Image (cartoon, rainbow, N blue to C red; front, side, top):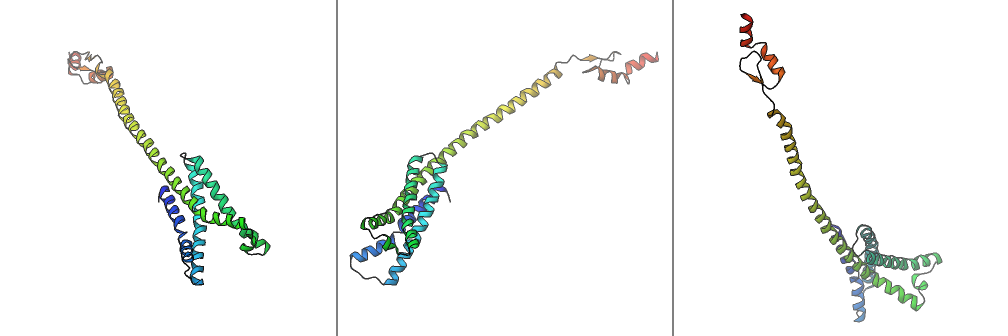
Length: 216
């Protein structure tokens, strides 16, 4: 799966994890009772989905910030806010465990309770927005890499014919002196010509004109 598709999947999951809590909120607004087991199951599902989305979103944003250049500052800001929101959601639970109290007892102040509730509700949406932006930044990076690769290929293709033509011209230059050599005639006068003195000397051993002169 490509990087933009991963961001879209995390964003969709971040939106879907709110669905169970929205169901409970709408049913409560209509004063429709919900069985405790059903409510517990929906809340557990929401809690697991929230943990998975926030953790996966943090990882995806961290990877995107380290690999892209587009909108990096905005992505760093969103990533920082998501990290702070994740920490703020976890700290009260840790404090409750250390003090032996429940989470509602730790969040006894109305302002603190409202702040924690806002973070719990907004963290999903912020993670979804950050993942969508990170996916767009990843999509903008891929065409740039493909454009650079396509620009390199014609240059390499044009370099190959140039190298081939250079080799061909070098071969022609190397072969040119052979065609401009002065033919060496047989010194015995048989009428044959040779390209080198060595060839002419080898011919003299069996030259009929030389053998005829020596026989006289």
